[in-house]
Length: 407
Image 1 (tube, one colour):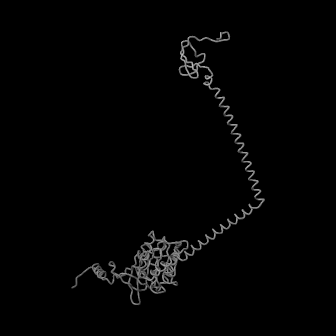
Image 2 (cartoon, one colour; image 1 turned 30 degrees about the horizontal axis):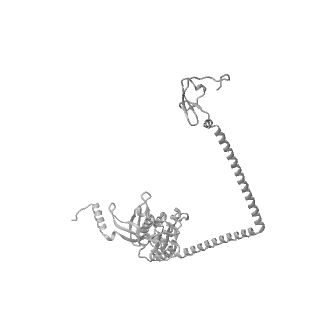
Image 3 (cartoon, rainbow, N blue to C red; image 1 turned 135 degrees about the vertical axis):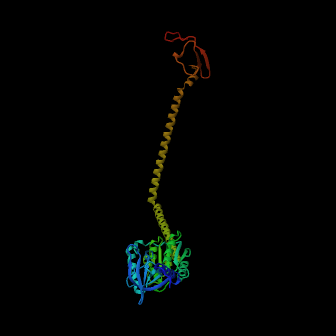
């Protein structure tokens, strides 16, 4: 008799078998969506994938569902990337979907139109968000495959038009499941580099399916958040992707993107030569105007009336100059004479000049001149002449009046 086990043990055993199978861990599965439901609270998506004969339950968790570039709908044909396992609690065989892509032109176009309408409503295509390209960039960041022809086309154009520019490559895969996230990450990395002046996202020509990855929402939002000017160059002139609408400029080819990104060296040379010639012409015109004006003035001055008028004004000016000089000399002589009179008057009042005429003055020991009240008997005084001083003692002080005998 077989060993008796529990339902839980059976489900656990079957789940271990499925998880141990590498072929079931990462598979791409095509089918039609049925019974699609997205939980409003959790954001998880629950649905079934079916074909003509069978169906299988599937779940896509919120973190993966948020990266979808379209809105899944009932009956839509898709390709999913998933792993197959068992949900132990219910014993249900189901798929855990990591990514989902529309399958077929009709469904793909529907998804593209849905995403375009969503992003346009959010303002990602608005013209006011478009940044101008730098006139003379020093460093250009490029997001493309390092082995593709797009990179070589960009290099050739930059070398020809503006060889001094530096090219900084951030290599990515440009098709496949991982391409969208790689391109978005590359845009963010280059946007954070200070030396990068603008960014080119490029891919060479291919089928519509080859270019479809550049319709991914994650790339569109990375381009919208990019602070550096971004040029989209995907496929050929007739190819349009979501990135073209979000980018600041759209180029029909990678070569055209390189032409937009940098100026033309030869054209700049012609502009500089034209400026140089215009400057020389303007300078020569100004010199000619000045020369002609000078000649006109010389002609006027050489005429008789003009010379006589000038000579008359010159004579008047010289006469006024002579009169001013004469008045200044007269005023100076008067001032010198007044100064001499004042000096003579001041000299006559000098007490020491009085002494020179034979007079003397009586002073105290400190040199102060004594008047009659300062003379007292037995007081020592000094009699000062112009060149000597005599020390004397007062014996008596007598008052002199008209009746006093004079000697």
